[in-house]
Image (cartoon, rainbow, N blue to C red; front, top):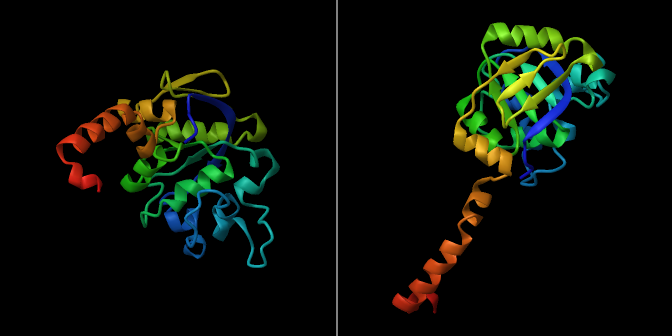
Length: 203
């Protein structure tokens, strides 16, 4: 999993509440178990016309936001089904951080397992950041996970909170497998001891 320490990037405004996982990645694209290749399908229902051409009015299709790494959106982001393809699609598209007033619990947890930083902030601050993001290519934010700070385009700093364990995992690029491998020496030592005490388990 990619590490997340600090990014400086354009933020795109998506002022929609209850962005559900079907909006993020529709069920038509859930047949794969690969984490790559899903970015082209992110937000497909509102990103493309029925003939597959791009909708000019969708924010991530606009030239200023095509390389956005931060998305600012409304409350209850990631609601709906628990599909892990949703954060896969967002990260494959190039997004590294979602800022919203609230997130669905399962989606929120899945973000940390896939290198995507979800930040919760009060609605009044979200409104200010949304206004910043509407500046287009000038909407450059710095998100500093180590210091738990967002620097707005005008230089103002906004603090946020993240569970310390999840912060540690993102900074060090540790998903569940990575956390297990950190203990590989202890696991190997246990297996060697078990081979002596219970050799029949290894036949």
